[in-house]
Length: 152
Image 1 (cartoon, rainbow, N blue to C red):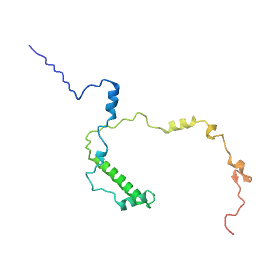
Image 2: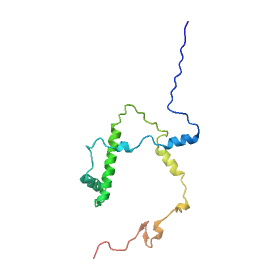
Image 3: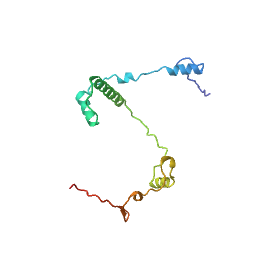
């Protein structure tokens, strides 16, 4: 009286790979290019020479550049801005934060770890060093300086 309808769905994109070499050959061919992302649709934010010099000053770098180096920096910065604009245009409604696999570090864990450290002669850690042993004149655990500090 009741009939159960079962239908198997299948689809094909291409032929099945016959060997590992075919798979490797397929994976060698790029399917997309990052240069397509760098083609700017927006030119509203563009780095010009005064902005470049200001960025160099803020970074503590020299602003004395030859024309070729300056042009290269401008092209690189504009490409980065274009890429950032493209990334910001992507709408991301859902995202999941990746859970961390570790527990938070506690002060007691740090104390325990430092308590287990041993000195290594390979690193030049040879034991206790008392700088007062090197002083020719000392008094009550302090260096004694016999020079005048001011100019005469």
